[in-house]
Length: 317
Image 1 (cartoon, rainbow, N blue to C red):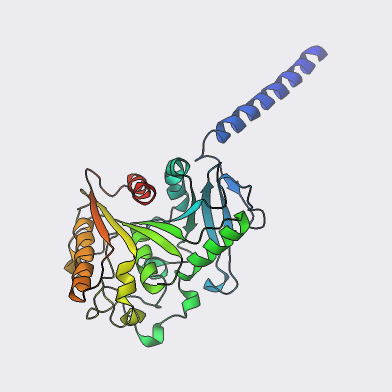
Image 2: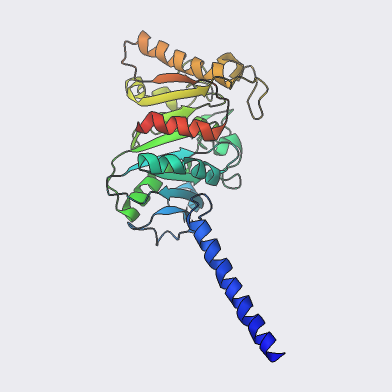
């Protein structure tokens, strides 16, 4: 009987060890399941793989914590390009990071995906509209927030932080924004024109702030700081607008429908081309060089996974 007990304990320990080895091996082989919580002070030039860190800035956004997911390919160097990905209205940054891992490894770029949580950035005002106004749908001079409280302001700070920690020397970063993330991304380059971004892909935004000085913000520039925008600089930026051929449901979940948004079209497909066409009209009217491009992704709908794949190829191929 004692021998049986001893044999049982040894056997149990053996299977526990075996189970642990199998789990570790499985996790190490799966980028999407490998999740490392990296304290900001631990992120360094040797960090690779997938994880997240929590970022705060004493000056910006009132010390709000930005949980930031990343993927760093194995064979990076100091010149490896950096891509910011902005998630949709589901605020599911980890899912977006996981969806870009394969392309990050293929094209050898560092993916940074900040999470703008509902708790810290509630509603469309906090995220889609960048917290520029207390109520973005009813902008007034008295409700304009200080620039250090704009959600847009944190992006450059995260870029500088990541560069410093991993000893990256990139002067520019790339951007992909999908759905609500595309809303955030296109207003980012309008409100923060001097930021260090290079190429930007706007993927299937629900609606847009159109370059128009006679339409009130958030649908146009009137009654906002964008009244003073430099349109020469605006249209010189490397902007790609993409939308799925079948992203044309006028009753899609979360799609804003009102008299102002519907002027842009009744679905995401129509609104993408309206945004591009109106921008080009303004550029042509003022004889300004126009550097934006638009394309339809044939056979695709609003799926963010496929959209991120197409967008990353646009930037890095």
